[in-house]
Image 1 (cartoon, rainbow, N blue to C red):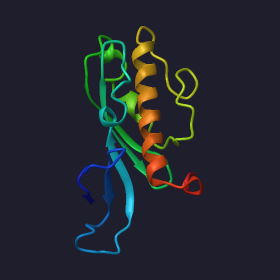
Image 2: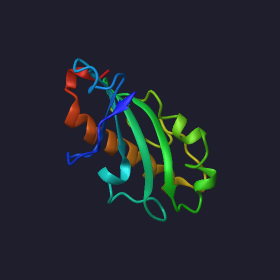
Image 3: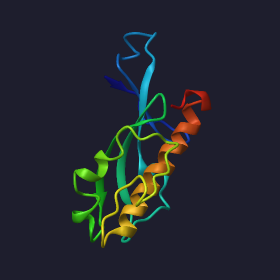
Length: 138
């Protein structure tokens, strides 16, 4: 697997390849990865920024979410738990990302969970608009 440098694109993302395109010029992207903090710096949780690395494939489905850095006071019972990012794997960027509907609600951490879901949704949709056509989405 190989990734392109982040570069100066807008929005900022990495392109993922199964084979290094420097070795095989016919290599096609298998997806994209991006930092939420690069794309949605104004979105805040209860206490501040929630930095996440998000992966998306070529049909607009999330391949993974890694919660990297946050200062959320209830993060240890919500977004820091392994169950939180797992629920986004396979989710389409067209899904609602609505807490209590298609994102699990955590009592006492509603603001944090809503913010994280909103950040994942908005970041993913920004990259999808830049790299995918509407007919590519599944």
